[in-house]
Length: 347
Image (cartoon, rainbow, N blue to C red; front, side, top):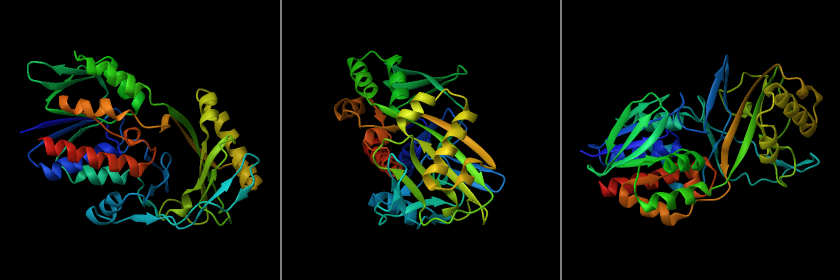
């Protein structure tokens, strides 16, 4: 039997675990996730009668394998599609139509985390939540991998190790890894070189419904403090009738500058911006709010593929949107499918 260890329970990890379990059912898969949730930045929260995706906003139909996975292979119960278009706005807040609306925009009535939950649910993988990996170790005697968590427990040995955290966190784990191989330093340089943009998000609830023709607004010139505003009420089952729930995401520069600022001040500033952009003064005074900072939200480029490919000879696989080179949920899932197939092929 082959033991497979996975660090992180993001969408890519869930897709890889699904493929491995389906292709090599005798493999024993163990997942260690530092948070209490699944699916990484494709995150969902619930508050009273609200459900909202506060990280990734939806799943695009931009990869045929992912489309087949979501609509045919997995249970599509509760799958919802946003039909309203995405409009644009500029640095002055001027709104206009302009985003291609041909692609599907999917979530679930219970939110995007359903993707990872359904993928892991179709496997026999053991998922340990709230388990932070602190040490990665290559065991020369067994030619395998071990992981030490923050509580001092050792997991493994694993014949194959998959690492799904954002590139900076993966680079740090590799930098401190007990692995005597020149490839380690090469990998650290390659993975550590992937730059990320931060995103600070405000979630704003209102007891009225907006009368606008769009689902979302995106800043195309990248010069406005706000990068994205979307309406969760456009997703069936997320928001009570007659209400509005806005997800307002600041752009990278604003998010970095204000990341450690008082959250209440950040929320108020983003609510004011939303009111100005949408043209409705009522939006400056939300009835309820939530917030989240994503320090490593969007990779700005992919990783050098050479060291990543070489690591597979040691049974080490890196995966995620930053490996795919595109900070999109469908790209993370597609990369996970690829990595799962590569691992299964070598077992």
